[in-house]
Length: 435
Ligand code: XLS
Ligand code: NI
Ligand code: NI
Image: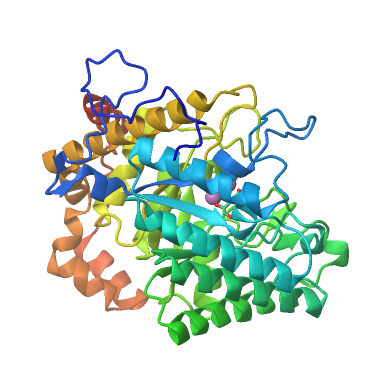
């Protein structure tokens, strides 16, 4: 029995690039084979429960703009209605996955025990809905940033009771994710950072965060959770400074605490921009270390300087992102989670559908362009040519030698390097042929 929320909207179908239907896929054709794999299996789209169903339209200057039948979100009956509507949208879109925080799916109120009980209840309810749907769980996570108890951090909180509460919360969320056969478990350190160094012991906080993550990994193995543990870099917001600043910082952190073989990264476009990087920079850094796990797809407004979490709409950017994903071998447990929300004036049910249809189409176009570039091999050939000098035995031997021997060889052979063009414009022109 339908909730009626999406009344009048038919399931979204692929109609091809010439379709003028605003609610049809023009590029996302789940069964189309790209580089030997179905598009759906490449992209592994997920809807983010928080932006689409839990967020009520607030911004720093104004309150709720969306009025939904499941508001106010303080009651289990309305939490079930929210889940019913969510699965109606997943079915209309034909998305293979969704993602949640505990606080998105059940009311955040009462004691720890009460929150755990309602989490178990709603995830049982969601589990039954999943049986009747093609949509699985890409990842679950704990919201350890909204409630006031987390204001000074979760695992990095100076109060050991908050560390305990965080450990208990993550255990409950991992159990629920495991129960729903989640493909990954994510930790984004929303308040794992500081507001001022004047009251912060960096060393102690980082050690606690490292130990906490090790406990997560230990528990994953204990319960036989086969998914991947992912951390999500972001430089700031809500904290002034977050410890998981960017991909390189996270990789250093994971190595310091011996977790580099156990944890991968969930890279988000908007967070990359906030860190002063590009999305493809963050993806390339993660991939270079074999730690590219999953992506949060969105885009930031390039003027506002906030994490605006808009739906993607820039094909050249998205194409370069998927180029790095494909080059790294594609997703295994990861996928493309739309960590993206409507603008707060987009009030209609149809806006939610249109946003995802557009985002999925942009990603499909980007994927196809990325695959075409990889298959053509132009960038890889140019790379191979640029580094070809290193194939020579003399160059390889140098890496096993030492400064003094290298100096002797430079003198003996009269080595004087000849600068060569980096050919950046030519490569940029090449990319533009595909996007
Ligand atoms: C916020 C983060 C958050 C994580 C999940 O900026 O992107 O949505 O993806 O906690
Ligand atoms: Ni984000
Ligand atoms: Ni995110």
